Image (cartoon, rainbow over all chains, first blue to last red; front, side, top):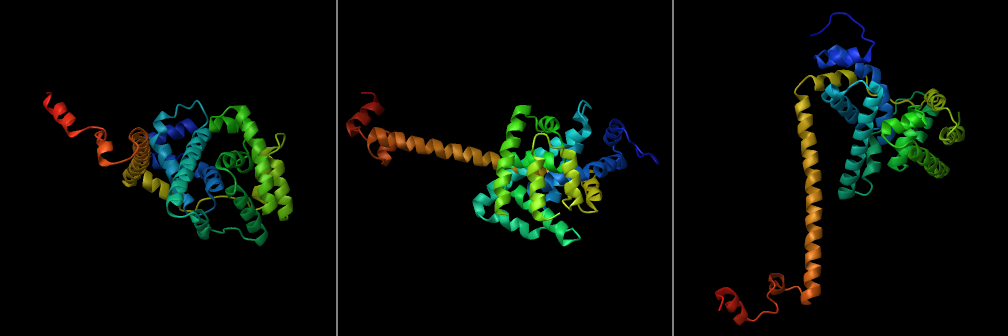
Length: 186
Length: 117
């Protein structure tokens, strides 16, 4: 069932229409949240072309679990949780893969990095942030990504990651220490 | 903004009193932006509303299976190693007989064991 002309702004309506097989409604969800997912996935995995596959998996997983969405949390929080889980799974998978075949494999991934910035300065800034993030421990990297790239408060970060607020605060402080050490070397 | 200013911004962004929205906006202004390709949305829709979804499930299934295999294999190897160590400690050597628990037995006693006489 495809509606001819509409602009669904309410999330619940979008979800209902998507569940009914409305391609455009689901397309609207994808368009609305793809940048948010890109920040999480690319912030965590690096700005490589392979991250697009993980991004696609996020929305595919969203679609297959859309019937479980009760509307208690915001749709963005629900999508963000899926993105975080799939990204952490991908990090684990890459670790397993590269530890089996190569010690320096992870660096090789960055040969495919896509530079889509116009000016040199903007490219450098992006590169600096990416390098710093990739050098961080994943459990700190996710906290930094949520806060620095997504602009989430500590409380929101705790909610998305399903962690106690105290844990997020302590990881935030340890992440800051780690980031300082990394940035000195860059 | 030069690299040292960006570094300062990154570190200060993690202060508990920093405004995360302001930091993310400033970083975006400085070129730290992330986005997927223009055809991303179309490709997602194609995959969701086509047979591609089945393929994804299969890939996921294979991934999970290989992960389960590694877990089982590692547990099995650990159990075998523990068994060999315990045999070595009890029997003093790892021979075929010690693996079968026959190292201290005489032929007669095996005959007794088998015949019951």
